[in-house]
Length: 183
Image (cartoon, rainbow, N blue to C red):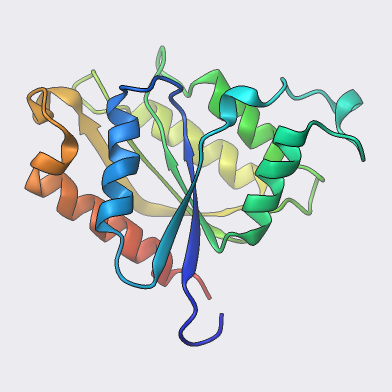
């Protein structure tokens, strides 16, 4: 990374819902990112076909090509995900599967990654976040295990996460520390 260059962080959101709190966390992450850090939100996970090695080749779907291109251009990745039935949403797992190829040489290979998010449970989605960390670590990125933020929705009291100073500060800290991991 040359001096003065922005750190580009690919943001993947595990929720497709337009009004999701996790989407609001993506908005907040963009707002609180330190100078020199640019968040690139890839908002097309719902367009990806289900991973199938038979269709993964030179003429792979345009949405997959776009995902892999933005991942290749990124210096790091931030995953923001809710918890669905104690695990990660299928749309996020599908994106991880597409990003894990070509096997051993994925677009995010060796790049730092962090997982954050929120959920309705009292622990804010920690099971899903742990599952996402595990899957991403196998898929190629260098998951930074101690960069964590799990937000129980009840702590937000129905408000946008930006209205919670602790959540905003914690998310700013995660983004800054993730960017610092870029070497």
